[in-house]
Image (tube, rainbow, N blue to C red; front, side):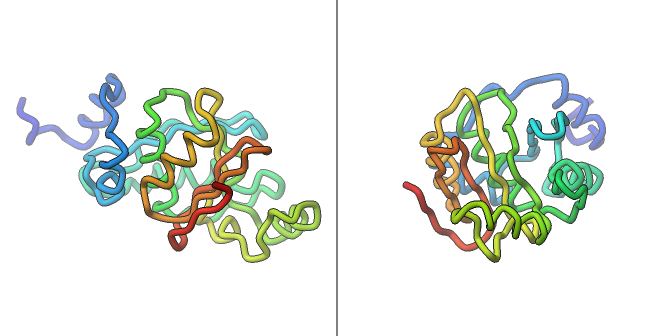
Length: 186
């Protein structure tokens, strides 16, 4: 059987049975976001809900709708149960950053989608929560890794040059979004 005759399901099966042996260097990060890879995968867990996700969401230049739907549910506002469509570009930035970090550890997701009610509550408790947070429109994620420092995660996300990256060292997480390119907390 040649590569051309493999079905999408066959490619996914082969991918699931193997691991990615080589990760790109920082210079290749932008290429990852522009479709340089044939397969994109995201691995996360939520300490809040106990759920985890490990899914291939992009194959052969196309997003997989069912996988994106799973991501939408996983990244829901855990306080209200509300879910919206997460912008796939945010997932792309997180996945590309993860590959650059050369780790098999899944991200711990602290925050994905936030309802306006949740955002207002968090804003009343902290000056670090934006009034018009991109979390409220499904364009941001706050992520952590035990095996990598906040500085390492920040540098990997910033190397993607594809959105906003915030470094929160005291709270031990990195904010990644698909909004305008900007950096803070460096």
